[in-house]
Amino acid sequence: MKIAEKLAAKAKDNFEQPGVTIAFLGDSITQGCFELYRIDEERFETVFDKNSAYHFYLAKILSVLYPTVPVTMINAGVSGGNAEHGLKRLERDVLRHRPDLTVVCFGLNDCGHYADGLKTYCDSLEQIFANLEEAGSEIIFMTPNMMATYVSFRLKDEKFRLIAEKSAERQNEGVLDMYLNEAKKICERRGIKVCDCYEKWKVLSNNGVDVTELLANQINHPLREMNWLFAVSLVETMLS
Image (cartoon, rainbow, N blue to C red):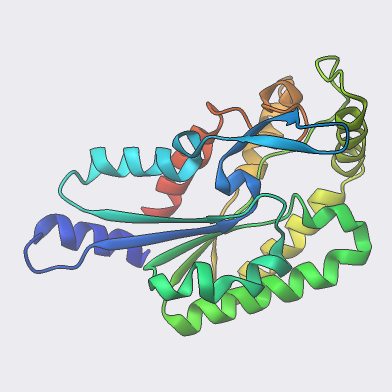
């Protein structure tokens, strides 16, 4: 990828070559959201921990591999967002920073609309990719983690249990798979690199790993430690 060439060029000639900017467009996973807690009877919130987000871990890895290269990380993740929302804020949150690379990760919230939302998801991704390409940004589409496959006994709040039940339904019935498969078809057609972390989660699940226990909220936010999987996978994709 060109991003690898830019990192290498800056490492070789720090004085003359420009720094590197990487943007991350996504939802709560990208923003760095973890456990859920209740604010009052009607409202709940998520724990935000940007120092445990996958972009932060990626920065740490790149600082080891390319210690002389300044890499600017733009975290444009928004909790509760989806591809359609990402498209609407693309200029404001990403394009104005003129990123060398943009990592796009949507699907978890989008699939909540089941089959009815698939066209909007695909159309939004298509336009996001087109706008990024026109702006000169290289693109990686990163698939997210799996959602819960059952309602965990750890969830005591009835509202959270209902959310987990719906998430498990979409996971077990293949709704999320349907969305991500369509996204990967778009990427194949457009020649966009895919960092398929979702497939790695599926491998874990198929080998007896309880993926629900790998979720900080037992619904859809990965443990802080599991964000290293995203970071390492992104490095592999960037350097391939």
